[in-house]
Length: 395
Ligand SMILES: Nc1nc2c(ncn2[C@@H]2O[C@H](COP(=O)(O)OP(=O)(O)OP(=O)(O)O)[C@@H](O)[C@H]2O)c(=O)[nH]1
Ligand SMILES: [Mg+2]
Ligand SMILES: [Zn+2]
Ligand SMILES: [Zn+2]
Image (cartoon, rainbow, N blue to C red):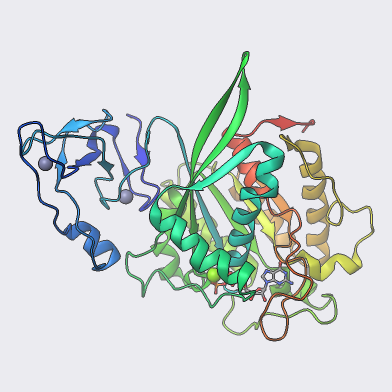
């Protein structure tokens, strides 16, 4: 089968030649200019945004980086997704394009985790790994700073529940970034780019079978999955949380094992029941670990570690993996372990804390501020599975 590409915005797949172009509406060499107009495909997908007029789109050989618009004879470099008509990243199809879907039950901490993770990667982690993370498009840049970063870091507020993809018909907009890493190849240092698309689902979309299916496309076409599980939603763990921890309400919330089962059966079904196990790497991330630090020995890898520099530390990651597996036994989570083992050929446990402590009773960031712990590990593991981040230590 010919290589297929996946759009980082709508997660639909297509062949490289199917990529369409958009006229740049500039004065062409023959003195013509195509007028800007509304694009019904964009309108349908994102609603009628004011002042969103664009050049006309047309078909041409999408394997090339430019095309000449027959109407005006202007050459354009503006390539768009044949399905959703959003502009594709420069060099799309030529650089690595990795889609990461994030799933988890309601209130498991997905939005906060994603915000802190991206903030960290743009700052501390970026510095240690010689990596950079840039919003690929104006919408991502604007949304990430105003809707996410400002709210948590500047206004110190938690997030309202993320809107479901059902009421938001077709309007799910992933945040799309370019992750750049300086890598030594032979004798010279070369930047290597990976397009990362983050899709923050609404927890309630995983509470019923029908709504899970809405997210099927995002999950089945993702190259990596971050499954966030909230130990505070597991009875065996919840009762041992540090006093003062803000506990999520349990009514209407599915226990983590049910979320995992739904995701698993959906992925298996999408593979036509042929593959014995799903080969998409899945990072199984236990959130809010700050609530359990008081129970851990000081030497536990879930409490202290040296931040890795420049490479993904395999042995450190495996010790966290084993530690979490042990905790799962105490948390009555053995079924989670068995389910993962039976469904996924590549899974790894992580224990993180995005905030470093519980939010205040008023749902605000605590006075001491945000002190994340190990938030970047799951992403670095996925990137190392993709071959985009080098490894160190033995596995
Ligand atoms: N103790 C602790 N609590 C956290 C942490 N991260 C999130 N929380 C709490 O969990 C709540 C829910 O976090 P969100 O990120 O909004 O959860 P979500 O998974 O996006 O929820 P939905 O959008 O409804 O699916 C927050 O309001 C915090 O009270 C953490 O690292 N530690
Ligand atoms: Mg959310
Ligand atoms: Zn034109
Ligand atoms: Zn698309």
